[in-house]
Amino acid sequence: MTCSGRASNISYQNISLLSPSQFLLLEKLMKACDDYEPYYACELDDSIHMTAAFLDETMIGFAGLLINSDDNTCELTALVHPMYRKQGIFSELVKLEQEFAQRLSSTNSCNCTESTAYTIIGSIPATLVQSHFPYAQHIAFTEYMMKLTEASYEAFMSTDTANHQFPPSSSNEIDDTHMMNPTTDFSDCEFCFSEDGCTYMMYANEDAEEPCAVINLAAESSFVNVYGVWVDVSLRGQGYGSALMDAFLEDYFCDVEYALKPLVLNVRSTNTAAFKLYKKCGFTEVSHISYWNLT
Image (tube, rainbow, N blue to C red; front, side, top):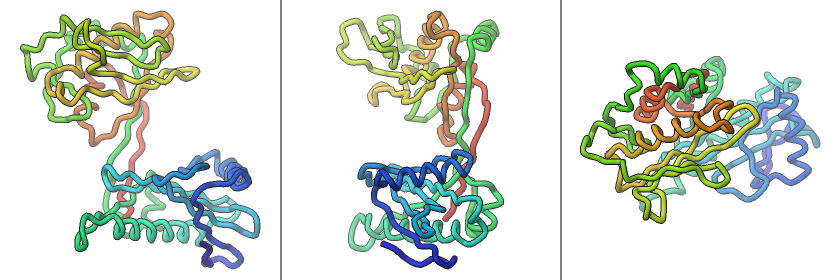
């Protein structure tokens, strides 16, 4: 699909998947935009929608929309080559993605009369919100990057607050309710790293075949990323999440192989239970990104 844009000689093309040559063009565009990386797909992926702006055979703008059907949001990422800014290209890319989101809402209907509305969100500068999204409502959520080093963990454990008791919460994402059910006994639980060191697992007892809670890890050159903290649905609200994190941190910082690298994780402000749990474990905020409601 190609349609004319506001700037002359510029065309806008919907791309279902990037061909090798298109990917090379996108790489050049990203490099010109300080290596900003939008959402894109080189294979068929229904969760990503892409639109590119071309001047002849050169890609000068690109928008990638990540579709999250779990919470009916579409996260917008877009970039325009510095040499072609202030020509309406960004606005045209945004308009095309907004139109797609509207069509997506109308086609994801629960029945003949009711449809699911998709909201576009994005982590863009407030100045762009004001100039390109006059109907933007408010910040949808803030994503925090949090960090825990061996030194800060040891300092935290030496304080009176490091008593392994966490306040109750109603969140189902990460269970930080160690005190909600004081009768829960974790003495029979088994904790261990997987053989490849990419997962930390909690077993309800030594005979359990599958873990009841896990923490996923991704080792980078200077840090280890924590993600995908999960507790079995049937065990949430009983303190398993806190017990899992408690044991994990102790084992992690006692292991010479790991202890030299700090732990880093990302958590949304909407996941209040997880945020409180990480704070209680000694993690501190190092940066944050705010996501706006753009529709």
